[in-house]
Length: 231
Length: 373
Image (tube, rainbow over the protein chains, first blue to last red):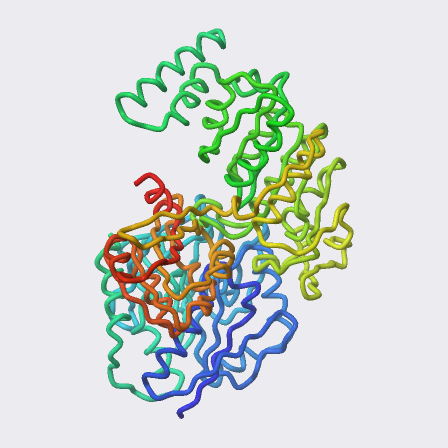
């Protein structure tokens, strides 16, 4: 497969923390691998495409998070995509949306149930740099978190990364969750800009092909510098 | 302790901090005064016309313009250097005057309104900024709304093309709602008033709940942020009985021009997606320096760079510097814009040897570093 479709979900709602950059980085990295990637922006009133290869959700304020969930509830397209193996990367509010339940505007809300996690309000807000080691990649990742929710994993989800700096899911031990090709994390940055190897992994998962390492010195310099200075 | 004594002691402390520590002396006296006399703001604001200015972008420059206008009415003091928390206000109010024009931090507005009973409050705009501190734009808007609702004697003036400002003004029965013909807002997909998906028709919004910018009290022509703020300052002036003062919008840009080894650099302050977008739209030359820092007042996270389109810089010679130069360089790289990364502003300028001028967009702390250099 040399063409992939990246679906950026509700950027006008889920675009508060710069996570829209994840789509840009995926497209950019794809080019190095000889893949043509197109970004499909889906807004609140649009129907999700059924043939996306990578679906992206980002961070949001409470009211926007609820509206995005409401729109995604109109059909089972995202669930269908996951069942046929599409990749999902959901950050912060997006991560909570695809879980079983979360809190927004002071109320508990039922999520999409696509990842076996549940988020509850924390006592304080978790704000700051994060460093963690991904269980999937075996690599150190960096990012920035800014959330009030704590996330508890169910039996069908594994932690996405082991945290060494920051709060992650709120316990200071793990960040995010993963189940097959569905990834959830609290890391902004955007996460794929800070950790281009993770972008490559998502492209591999989306196409089913293994790609050789690419040379983009600036990307490598940026990622390793962030790893070095995040302490 | 008596107020007069507290002021004298605070002044003395300010003098010491200036002489010994070399500080600017804008915050120390006010800080000490508020410790010695916690109700100082209330006492000092009494029998004086207080005007407050708040918003994400343009506070300092608009406060400057408004001070010029209000000064035509009587003796006016102002926290002109941007010391915009309660202590800065306290320092400013230690000087006797008929009028005080105070710039106020967005999160401190509620407190300043409650304590100074202002005559007029000008609300400029509310967009994403320093999210590590503000958390959510709506959270700040809710605080404004609460502050406005509690100030029944105050006149509120604001730009309702910004839905968050409009939402805050909606809590007042004494407001002057100004529109500049509508304008897109990148953080307002949700109606701040009722929480449903806000219906935008190009530059104007109209929610099912009735919340809209198309029913303003005053509608003016679309204009740059600086020109809009100049108009708003004069509307506040008019409300206070002042005559219109002609203000050059260029004076409302936070910028200055300085020569570095023969190269004339126009340096402009940039802080967040809205102000970067505004500043980028004003870039006219081919040589550009971008300085990015991420200290507390800059916002300690740089994720927002990905919400700004740097398209305007395609084909230009771009040099980046600052503590987070690499964040900027990689952001530009992914947008297809290659830049040279340098380790200091001096080195960045040297890259343009032989050019006559260069445009510099500088993060808050970098801008102030260059102002004071």
